[in-house]
Length: 236
Image (cartoon, rainbow, N blue to C red; front, side, top):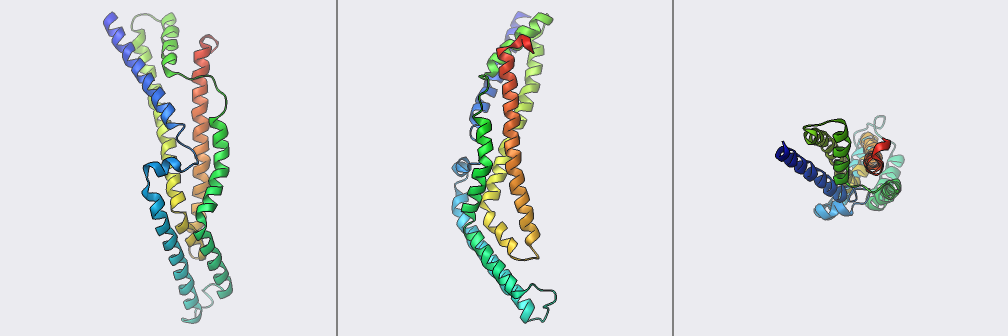
C-alpha cells in the first residue's frame, strides 16, 4: 500500500499544480479589456472596418427602402414617418461609425467592478498547499487509503473549478464577438422593423458584461475559501 499511496499522492499533487497554472494564466487574462481577445484573434480588428462599412450600407438601404414605401408604393400608413426616419438614420449612421468609442466606454464602466474584484486582497492561494492540508486533515480522521480519498475529492474540485474557468473564458470570447460586431447591431436600430434586434443586442451585451463580473466574483470566492482553508485548516 505504501507504493500505491505514493503514486496516488503524486497524481494529486500534479492535479493541484495544474490548477495553480490554469488559475494564474486564465483569471488575470480575462476581463472587459479586449487586448487579450485581439492577441488571439487579430483579424477581428481588421474585419471591424468591414462591419462599419456594412453597417452604414444597411442603414442607407433601410432608409431608401422605407422612403420608397412612403412615396413609391403609396403605403404611407404602414411605413415610417419620413422626417423621423431620416433623423433616425443619420443618428444611427453616426452611432455605427463611432461604435468603437461607445463600446469602449461601456467596457470601461463594466471593467471597473471587475478590476476591483481581481485586485481585492485575499489570502495567498496555492492549490498544492491545499492538497497537503487535505491529506493532513483526512489522515487524522481515516486510515488506510487516505490519499485515494483525497485524490477523488481533488478530482471533483478540479473538474468543477476548471468548468467555472472555461465558462468565464467562454463569456469573454462571446463579449469580444459582440464588441467587434457592434456596428451591425447599431445599424439594425435605424428602422422600426429591426429595432428589436438592436434592443436584444444591447441586453445581451450588458448581460455578458454582468455575467463576466459575476464569474470573477465566484472565482474569487472560491480562491478565498481555499486560501483561508490553507491558512486556518482547523477553524473550518
